[in-house]
Length: 543
Image: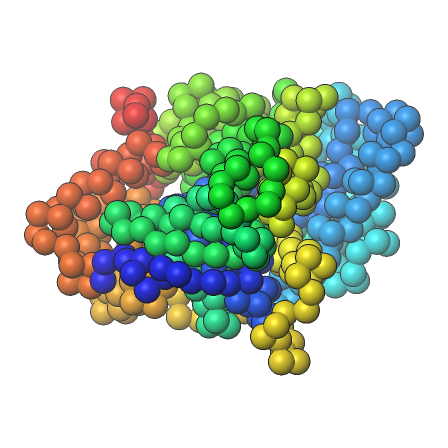
């Protein structure tokens, strides 16, 4: 089932969405449901960028109130407080919507925030922030906020692992959620868009060439197999995440024959990338149902989060990043930092590299701001007409948790620019859903024929074209555990006929995936024993 663009040449649509991460897929879903003709494409697979490398939190919005000195920070800058309030309310609304409609795709747990005398986040900060969230957000699901001020080991089974228990002032607890795995949400949104009439193409690079005399953007499309096609769109959304600036820079300069646009200067920079790394470990039973939030010793948020079974992950780091974020991995320094902060928070665990199952890293596509070295976290839509790109809009800093509202906002922007959808016919958007055909991390791992059927379904129905797309993005088997060679070979044999792989190509794909596990996810290769931590010595951790 090789990729081809032969059937796309000459395509005309209302909206082209470049970038099939969580926000682009959600936008395509909303637009096609509203009746617009839509092209959704990505130069890699669905969710190949930041969407698959996030911290997976469906958080309540508390972090938007975090500041070194919140009274001074917000009192002296009321606009900053209003923006934080707006983002926190959006967080609570997203938490409500997804927990209510996609319960199988998220996992509730009790978040615990320990407060020490020297903590930058004080007990009263948490009181004010969480009470404010209760007032501005929907009533359900409840935050279940409470503050523990003593006898910690009786209230929290893991409390004995915390540092300086005799100096602990309080622990704030509240309900939070973690995404099962965000790629599934992205794939499902793309499939819903396709079911509603969108043309969906992954592994398809899109370049804005110029506008024709009818003011439609001409797009040059190129697939991985080398096939090329030309399409036209009245409106373009650039949701390419970390690669937004690259897409804009490659756009035509408006000087081509047939367009009435003036030549443009170089586009304004929109993206400030920040890298975040995480490590996955296995924790004792006393941690089940809990997560821990704190500020690490460099003053940024740091979490211990439940994933599946007894797996938990620690992170993130946060450092500026420039360059290509494709296949980015955690460095040795970042792994040492994560271990150091995990052991500072929970010295009773005494974690070492031998306890790391795997790591991952991603780059957040935050909004560039010359006055903020780490960028702005506010989700923003940029009208690129000022850069000589009429009817092109870009979205920056859209977190996974608010992807549904991002899709609705972009649909409204399309309605303002194009008018009502010409193909609407009174249609109303159908309810969001998550796929019922794919296994979930919260469910037992499929085996035998059921697992092989899931591999084939990923190719025949979900646009998977490689083992990474099958084993990470669509079935999450590789997120569950380190995959041994025989696991990967089974997947490759299951889909080789569908993807027209020769025996030689199949062997190459297996080796490529094993190398991807080892170098990108820094996965240990020695043991597949489910009863112990997967060993990863210093030597194994080298790229």
